[in-house]
Structures are given as structure tokens and as C-alpha cells.
Image (cartoon, rainbow, N blue to C red; front, side):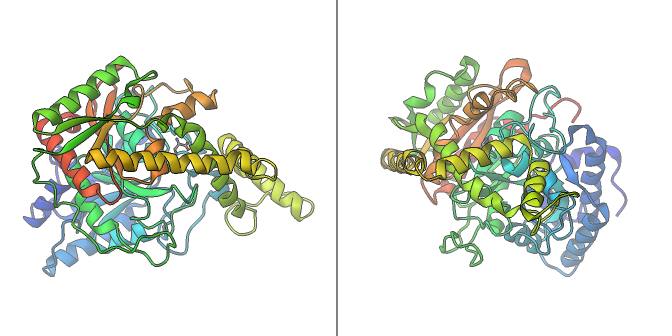
Length: 494
Ligand code: GLN
């Protein structure tokens, strides 16, 4: 086959993953051509700073292998489709830094289970994506390698911590990107960049080889153009992993099975606490219009209540920081990555290594986490937060007795500008108001593009479902995307 022309490459990049799969099946394009098309776009959009490590020769090798599998008659929805991975998934062929100086140049000896499963399915990796350092942040401004720009407005943040993933999919530098969500890091960037971002049930995707931030919350997921694309990739990505002690041993399922389902009779819960102070009118209007569209298609709206959801922020920042302080103790200058160059004794080496290797936000979390776990404060903070976490989960359980999915905003406002919140950690933490409750409960949740606000910046609709009900949630999102075209809009210059 001939090299795709510039025009064809442009058209290819605007296809969904599902459409690319059809083109590969019909042999209208090869995996190598697809890989070249995206590598070329990544190069041309370097100003976004979405990628941290790109190695064309390895990508093209994987693409050639996918073409050979197809030539031998093998078929598969993902065989030959490009993907890019957030830099918290360890990879053998690309560096893994978690966007930290601490792991600069670090190379893992194995691939994360998620990366491996997708490679087995024939996906071709385009490389590693920028993010907030150790996935701590809501704007990508905490990356040690510079912030990512929002493709809709280069003066706005792309969201965080998965800002490289969201910007890459929004700018069509990859048809799909992996990401991780601990308190909203998939949904908030998806909302800020007008793409679809989905976090499955905690424990459904493997955490093996995912650099740990807060182990009881960390969940792998995806940024895609559509819910349909997400369902197809979930089919290969989610499943039991004996190497992860919190992985859930349940039979595999087909996440596309609700894509044809009508909304007739589906009960959509609208939590009244999600439409209170802090929600900007333009976001409220877009989200209410989207919920109205679900109703127009036959869904039944029910009011639900999550009275403790507002406590999500303090609870999350106690629990997540506590777990982070423990998880990050492994970066001691001995086992992984960086070691300070000049030091005295062992303690001095560790001190200097950690002082030089970690950025300000990571240090802040380690300090807060160590404090709330220390003797005398454990009961007052960590234990108390754990109890309230239980209450929040219980409130969701009760809400799901009355509805099938919950709908609401993802963020209070559209993407903010660089520097607008970075000097005030509490203002930054408040961006997670609507996303942390679902994380604390461990339920599946997603952001679906539903409009635009100030300065043409995108708005997201959040959908949440009960544990293990991600297929139904994706089905509702799919119906919405069949009736609207917000997800198909692209930024100027893309
Ligand atoms: N913004 C939240 C934080 O900084 C969530 C991060 C995440 O989900 N990884 O902790």
C-alpha cells in the first residue's frame, strides 16, 4: 500500500477506534500506515507537550507485527490500532517516570498488566504520556517535565492528572489513551478537553505495574472519543490478575453488550447536592440539557440524595495522602531511579535524594499523609476519614436502589488558565468536588462531552453506576452520543 497522503492521514486521525478497526479489516489501511500517521501528528503537535517518550522504531515494529498477524488471517477489534499510555504504567520499551525527576530515565524490566493485555490484543503503542507527578494534581502543572496545553485553548490547562492522555485524544494524536483515576484524574481532564473518559469499578482493571499513588483508590481507565470505543478496549483490558491482590476474580464480560439498548425505563438519578453552590451556571445549563436529552429518549429521572458527598474532598485528601506517604517511601535512592550525587551517610543520601527528586506537591502530600497517620492523629484524621468514606459508599448504595445511573457535573467550571490555581492548593483540590465521591465508593464513573462554555472550553456530563455496572453506564453514554455530536467536535488546528 502507498503512503497515506497528508489529507488521508488527517482523515484517518479523525476516525474513531471503531472506524479504524473497519478500515483495517477491509485492508484500506495497514497498521504501519496508521502508526506513521499518528507519529507524524505527535511530531507536529509537540507544542502541546503531551508525550514524554516517543520511539518510532519500536512503534513501527509493533505495527509490522500486527500487520503480519492480520496477513496470517487473524482478526480482532484492536489488532493494529494505536494507543498511548499514561506514564504511570511501567513499560519495558519506553522510559517510565510518573512525570517525576525521581524516576528520570527509569526503565522497567516488565510491562504493566494493562499494557501487556492491550499489546497481546495487538494494540500498537505510540509511547508515554505526560501527567502530574505521581498522578497528584488536577491541571498537569505538577509535571516535572512541564505542563501539557489544552488543545482547545493553549492558555488553559488540559486537566489532571491525566492531562497528556486527554490532550492526546482531544488533538487526535492517538485514538485512545490509557489513564488512571484516583480521585478524578480521568474524568476531569476528559471534561476539560471534550473527550470521553471512563474509570471502571475499582479492582476490575489490574494495578500490577501501575505506579502506586493511593492503592485503595487507584483505578486504570481510558480516554477515548466515544463510549463505544471505550467498551471495545475494556473488553481486552479489564479482568482478573492474580498478580494484584485487590484484583476482583469475576468472569470476563462483554462491555459492548448495552450499546444497542434503548433508554426506555432506565432510571437516571440526579443528586441534588451536585447542583448547589460552586457550580457555574454555564456548566449547570449544559449538564441539565444533557440530562433532558436522556429523558427525551425515554429515561426516567429520579431525584437522589448524597448528603455526605460534600465531605468527599477532606476525606479524599486525608486517605489519598496517607496512602501516598506510605507508597512513596520506596523512593529512597536505593531501589529505584535517582540518587543524590553528593551525600554523607545513608540517612543524608536518602534525605537529599528525596529533597531533590520530588516536586512541591508530592512533598506536600507526603507531609500531610505522614501527619494524619502519626501517633495521636491517626484516630482524629485517618480513622475518621475512613469512617466517613464508608458513609459515602453507603449513600451511593442507597441511591442505586432507586436508579440505574447517576448523572451530574464533572467539574464546577470549564478548564482554568495556567497559574490560576497552582498557588493555592485548596482551590486546586476543590476542582475534585464532584469526582472524589465516586472514587471513594469505588464505583464506575465517566465524563461525556456535553457542550462548551466560556471561551469555547468544553463541558462534561458525569455518569456513575453501581459496582460492576460499567457496561450499562457505557450503553447510556452511547445513546447520548448517538443523539449529539459534542464528542465529535475538534479544536481548531487539529
Ligand atoms: N486531583 C486529584 C489529586 O490530585 C486526583 C488525582 C488522581 O485521580 N490521580 O489527588
